Length: 145
Image 1: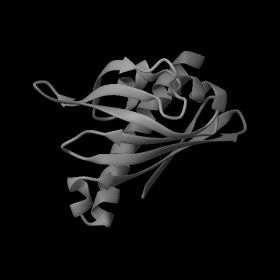
Image 2: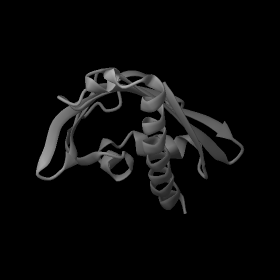
Image 3: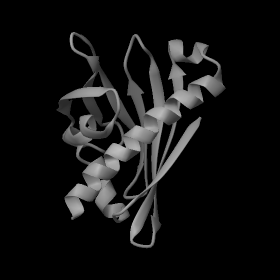
Image 4: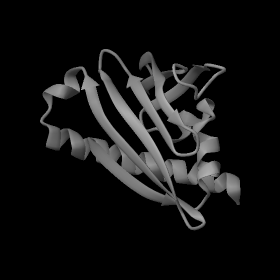
């Protein structure tokens, strides 16, 4: 599992507000190109984001589903983008003074990415999630200033 961490200058509740707005995911998740729909119950267990990944004209429509949720602390998702595969993605929020340490743990759970050696897969996921967390910080911090 690839683990990537960044400190965001906001409270866990402020970070959580962004994670709870499914329509914002294409703003910070690298690879998500558009949101087609968000279940009204997002981020309740079993709720889904209906998204597209890739770039036009090669877009893949699929979903991301909530597996577990601990409000303002943890969000465990299964992200799908078939035929590319699927991954388990966990956001963990830990208070640190006036800031929040946000950690993303991610790994492929099905599909072609599992054929890649884990160390190589982890490096690629880490690079992607460094940018995802950078974008998430921009969105969260921009809303709190």
